Length: 108
Image 1 (tube, helix red, strand yellow):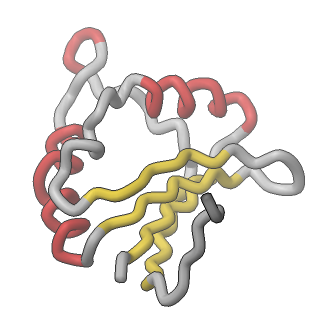
Image 2: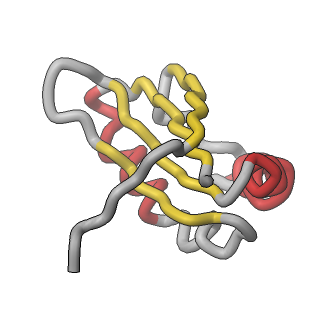
């Protein structure tokens, strides 16, 4: 079965729009990766300043290949005006890992 990776990002209120715009601009950076199955960016509604970045992968090897390949390239170099990297929108990040042991879909 698949594996799930959830990146928990602590995002101050004033940086929420910045974070969401950056994710919207990522334009397929993960969708074309081998073994990629699903992505969701989850905005908190109340009681927390933590966004959840949910991705599902066919296996751990697919996730690691993405981490070492296109993810590293897209997060690595400078990019803003004057070659400076933009300031991170999140003030903290934690990665949770899960193995899918059961799943269900709506009945047709």
